[in-house]
Image (tube, rainbow, N blue to C red; front, top):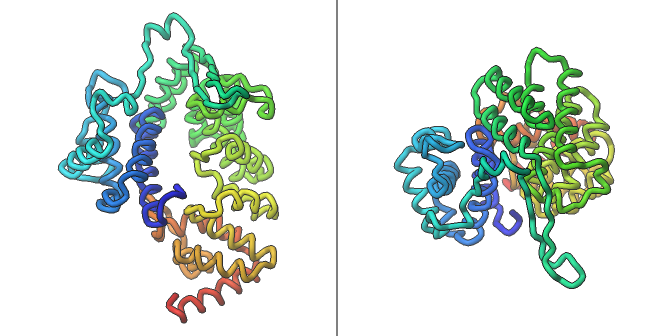
Length: 403
């Protein structure tokens, strides 16, 4: 969030990353979105309080607090998890988790009557009778400034299939995931996440994985009734129902890049960034790296210009690369100083004086893991010999001046 200082922004991103990872594994998109929104409100309105405590403690506190008012710990509900398991997965003790949860509830004035923080649960009997409807209201979009409600109907079988595939994501091994994914597809053929899960079968070749991921994108388009992206009402992409579409495009793009179909990879990821204005999947870092690698500097610059004060490590170092490649050395030097402050370890990995290792667990801002994560693509971004020579020179200057 650009409204926060660099220190708080880094902590915010770390908490959101932990919540997202936990929700994808054990909860669902509704929990993930409401927990992220709660975190955002906490950071915007309680700066002094959120400075204290570890990111893992706040993540556990937020999820537990939201879970408390939504009966997450009731075994009769789905999703369900034990509070002790929640604390364990987020790496905190039960005393830390419960006390931080209480603090979150106090700061948000959160109780069982807090409608804003209550997850709406669909009536399953109603699902059996009719289609599920998704609606969003946008203010001041008509000429007479009257509220205009945008409605989109979702087939009831998609809702049922999606609940099954949510269960699939929570399974630990692939065979169980695949079993539920296939079950979801028998109920509704256009279930994007089911195809994504099946594409993770290690026995498949790259072409077979690609075909499944293309089916995922097509399925998501069918759910949204999209024939041409350019002709689609942009309000549709603000609905939760659009999230599987973005996820499918994103996953396909990563696979296409890995199998060296780079133009198609860029096109798919660019679609995600174009139509998902909030960039919930943080595509801008990867996409700008890809564009620079492929020599599409103008396109990379256009994206970087829209996030000039971005805290993301990738955009900070990619901005330096773009400026250098365009011969703007003074601007590149200033940008490198800012990026170096953000994480000075990146240069060591780009110069190959340190070896990139396998990254496990959460990635903290300013950490070696964060630097290695960028450098995996960054080595190709910074492959030019003149760039490397300049980086070495700048690093020596920084060390002499003790920065």
